Length: 106
Image (cartoon, rainbow, N blue to C red; front, side, top):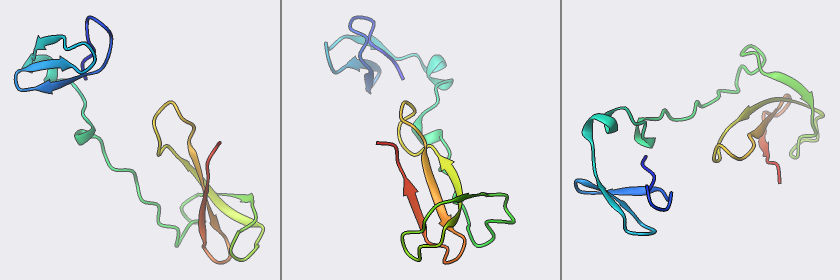
């Protein structure tokens, strides 16, 4: 990722140049420095949690009312699914019916 030297906006690639979408500033791309950049294509996909053996996998239990069966116990874990400047999302899995739901901060 490159940021504009003129206005600080994020730049995009167009051929052999980085181009600012805000002020049209351009600068040549540098293959050596770009090789060390991390792209979203290189990031790993989030882990899928298999809840069939939730207790054996070390998921913590908490008091939470299941919206499906009204059981008062659930396994829970947190995962970052939105941008980094937003809080993590809490996921719950009912200990009785294995219904899954999530809780976001608002």
